[in-house]
Picture 1 (cartoon, one colour):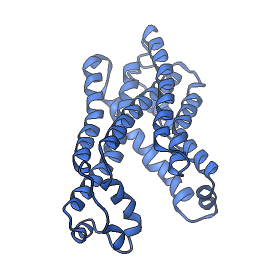
Picture 2: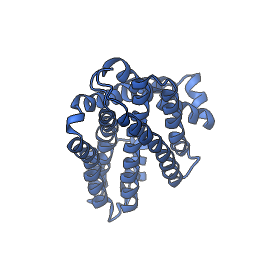
Picture 3: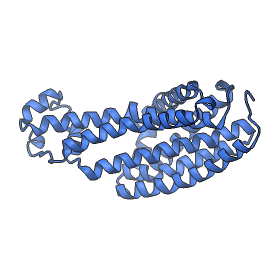
Picture 4: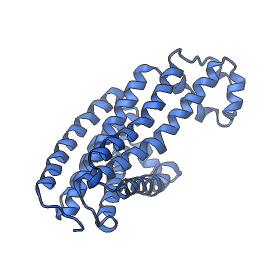
Length: 279
């Protein structure tokens, strides 16, 4: 497989990936520990667990099931979406917004009916955003680290054998190998900052949906869906090669700031009101 013979692992790839793995694992832990320590009497671990399960069911089971039909499988729908940038972007942001925000709404409305404190809304958001790191992104970074270590040893055949890359899987594996080999401290910083932004976004969206359920504000769910869609727009464009990576982060940070601003106002409003308790 000649396409792998000229791959050179940068000197900073392995240490940068090691630091990235450590920091990504630490992000959800630190969010949880700091919030739990500050609000132990107002929070319940059940909301953290609900956030974890809510993400896994809504985003990793239901949403991925729809993606299989609309993106992965070969049919007229998938061919249209994959062949049209506007359709791909609209589909991607709509699915992410609808599945994740409706997932939060269903959990708050029908399952988590007790201890509806604003502090528990944040706890749910930590669980939702934290498990996305631990179950989706951290394994990817660990895979990149393994690739970088194996290819840095200089024996391409041994690396391919260890990674079980064959002639049939070479084309699919090449982008991952190139990404791992070219990983550096700039990419480390970008990935860590992106996850911090995503955690704040998840917490903010959770507070907005929670407020709507707790106080019967029907406009909160559509608002959360819209904010989620807007935040994901440039990420979808980047996937189609229609936007550079730096624009994704700037755009996402801007909409996260808007979301957090709204969430903080709603959080403070809930704190000023009498506790909802089991309402």
